[in-house]
Picture 1 (cartoon, one colour):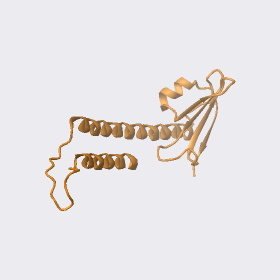
Picture 2 (cartoon, helix red, strand yellow):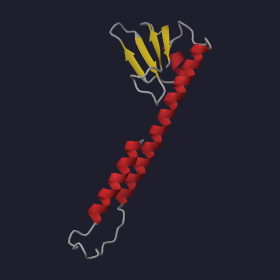
Picture 3 (cartoon, one colour):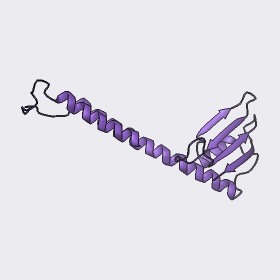
Picture 4 (cartoon, helix red, strand yellow):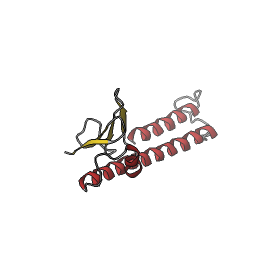
Length: 139
């Protein structure tokens, strides 16, 4: 989020520098009218929309983690469940890996956690997409 904000600030500063009168002397007031081009405004709107999309996706990532964790703790998640059933009920994993033998490994984590942090849920599926085991890690 912080990077997006900095990008907007830099874009605005660059836009102001480009519009400044390069021929005005240091003591002379430049007679430049500042106005945002149509393309600049479109870029700012697109940047804002992409930020909103990212925030929604991060919220969904955390919600999915909470759902799968609650499913494990309440013992609703059952060994032998199919991966598609789990995906429908608990949402998309953050990581979905397929091993050479056809087995699957999924990882769910909160959006504010890094991949090296300890708070995650691992699901392991066999080659027939049936849940073999899970591991719920938390700090």
